[in-house]
Length: 199
Image (cartoon, rainbow, N blue to C red):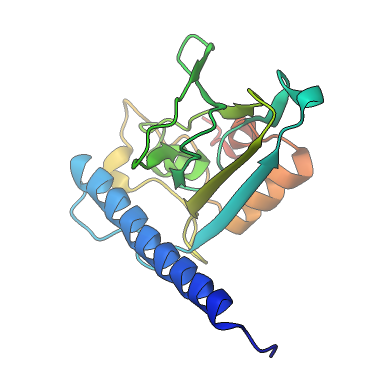
């Protein structure tokens, strides 16, 4: 193993502590969502979290174009620490229009992904979003994704299924769904149509 300089070791330790704290926060938010929807059981324990630092280098030639294509997140929920100085994040509203999410110092942004939609039997909505290049500068964000169960299938709890709202999706694993999204290039929530239950 390469020898780390004290400064690099400090940075690494800070990132590890941050990632652990955000993972705990993601599980807590998920649990509170479940409780708010009437579920008493403990959910999300053991669900893995993925941590990613995004760095965008927006040049003058690229201003006005898309920095990240329109997509939904594949996992259950995302906690984003967005760049406090550079905007560009936009979410799609119910009408299909994009709304800018302006940076707000000292805040975290939470959005729900495809697994939340499937797990809740359509009660929770996955959020379409993109990043637009607004100015020629570097933009950095830190995203933490609560993915889905490591090995168990994603399926709606029985409390979310009844005659008025029959099961919308067949059970599937997060890993199989991730591969399906990648192979079909359906990144804006449309891959969920491929795991819909037949009525």
